[in-house]
Image (cartoon, rainbow, N blue to C red):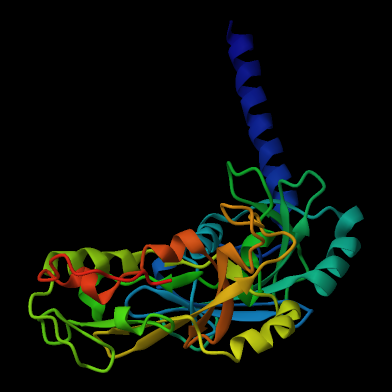
Length: 349
């Protein structure tokens, strides 16, 4: 029995020594800071810079209110920001790159890698700078290397099955929040909605002084009995209005003539900080891939009934908008008039 205990103790000691030397061999030649990619408190991150060899580059900055912006121009897509911060927080080294693969991995990172700079607490100097390469053969690991290091690693998020490179995309279009309007009611100072073909239905809702006032766009025709509950419900609709996608540059040339004409519908929203956001709506000519080609009685349509063009300012971008998304915002001035009685009204379109 004594001999068995001695053998068991000897086995445990030898096993411990073996594990120690395996670990030591794996990392002994690499300093801790050269394999430390993670930031343990992402709340301290105030800026992230991403760039690749193809000329794509973006700067993501966190505002005082916690919102993130892309290149100081656009609101960043929240889901993408959360995904990137998750990687930055959880990324861990799975293994050191094998010697047999070293040269190939280094070349691939040098030619196709994405540079990532992470800044904390508003400092001008980056806390971490590393390069993100492609995926491993099993697609469960991602090659990364700290700047000025010669030791690349295979990294991963423990428990996540996939590679991490897409979360570091340096393309601006992948980070823009596709928002037309994302206002809370208390943030809105005024809303102006104008119909080119039905000006009598156009209106301004003004709540800048705390009262709810509805007039025509020129300030005339003040409603004596505005529907304050209806106005409140209408303001809430401006919290979640998104466009489908941005129109690619290569297709913009074909619609220049359309954009040179007055928009059919115009929105203008001013917030309590006096910042204005404008959306100009244009009909989209019917295309071969339009879902509906004819109307209810079989006549060929001229315009796509399901999608519209929208020109958004101050971003100055052209976007596709689904008709069902924007339809919920269409109202007439008379819709907010409690004294309208049975007066006949005209449609907006």
